[in-house]
Length: 239
Length: 271
Image (cartoon, rainbow over all chains, first blue to last red; front, side, top):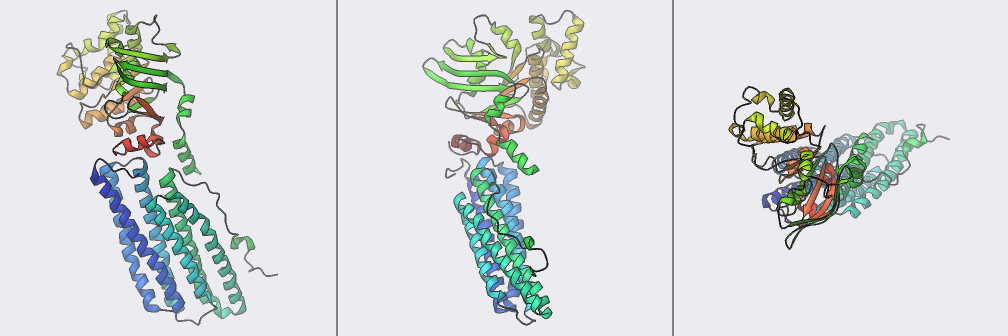
């Protein structure tokens, strides 16, 4: 909708919540990248910064929810306006969850810093985090531009993240079987990998909200799925 | 899955409205006031026991179309109606149809409460009397009480039925007019902005009443308040410049309208 409302304050309110959502998205993207860098570089200080920064993300979500409630109460949005407002609230919720995962990554980074390194998982996790940030960034751009095509592209890319997670899962199993002293570190790394994989899921939830915003309904669930680690049983694929 | 089913209900369209029992069917309706083409080729099915809202900007033809449904436009000399409108399959513009009898079946409530300068009792008894619907005083008393009860007014006026109807408050007067309209046991109730002269409390009472009336009548309401249409109706028709632009379930119209003109209008944009 490029047309303006007769009541221009309504347009200003909508623009304001959109801007706040993008600001929150920026904070979350940054948190992921910094958490991944901190992990790879074993940078405790940066990890602490990510942990502390989560408070600002939580506060943004609260502010967005307040603004959305106010807008619904005062402006009674309908049609695209209503879907826009609802999608902002849901996306803010997803962003907040992603922020929590980044914080959890940072916490585990601090613990891992006091253990010997295991394999080269830090680099793989950073690549995975970068892929998730790219998905998230495109999903948020798609929201601003009302671009359902770009959102669908994000949905399809989640499969790559799932594949990276599956590869890491097998790698960690191997390290743990090689030497039981790796188990603690590998468990932490595995939780981190799982967190990043969950971030990808939230990015797809955001993309689905964009499709809802543009078309009025959620996409049918027919996107490709990577084969799951649970398809292999729990014996670590022992022959 | 529950959530998904809910969404699907909202996605149902005009096709599902047609599938419900149709009370009034309009086909190719055109209305002219002299040279002005006020209604352009409107097809619509009004479902029975349902509230249907007509919305649209001023001058879009929604009231004109409403007035076609009980031939109120007959009273305007320069007005000409073409096309076919049927009530339960019978053409209401047929030569043999008596408009007065038709209006007993298709009642109407207007924008401003317009009680007769008579007692509350006589306001409600007027229709049954002129149509000879009751045989004696006891029956008439019964009809008056039932109508006032259905209009949610009985408890407020039962002790002063002989007081003048014009002495009631605005909201009570409008409910009295609704009682008067339903006293002749109509099948359809047309309401032309019935709440525009009422305060929010009286509006809420009339809206509650409309929701109850739906159990027995087919209600068609013209309203300038989109929120009112959203609150009281199951189906909504959007008129613009004499055209019926979009007709569908109210929830669909207000969340995912198909036509950009509907979207512009209901979201308060310049259309």
